[in-house]
Image (cartoon, rainbow, N blue to C red; front, side):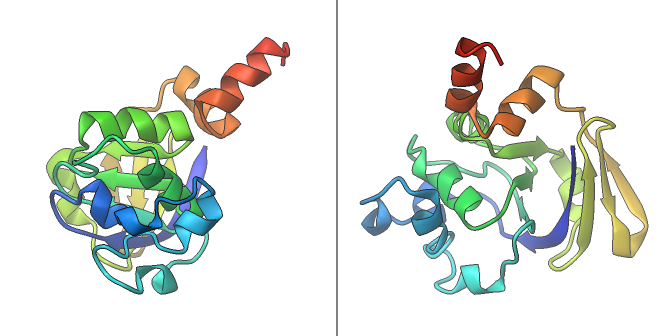
Length: 165
């Protein structure tokens, strides 16, 4: 899978309430949640985002509650990938289950700046910072996990398998 978009960088310990504040949890519709993505951090964050852009976090991204609304809000905002130093474990699992690609890069995340143009090749395990002509190596996403992402999440993947697809 290849992803390309502009980097939107946030800090360390971005919790699920910053990703999608509790007052917006009256729906599970990704598009509606996406309208309020990261409004707990920056009220009008979504106005900066174009479909396909990439979110870049620091340490412990997605900490807090185990709500699935957080990865749904990110996807609903048109962001298919989050790169971070590290992820809270429950968010990491929920992200993949909802169809959100998450890439941990450790200290290499510091090479990425707000507004950088990123190109990600999940099969090669490579993040290219196009405007800086730099590359960051990451573990390739296992084929099984790529299938879950391609299907739009674990439920869609399982339904397709049950139907024999």
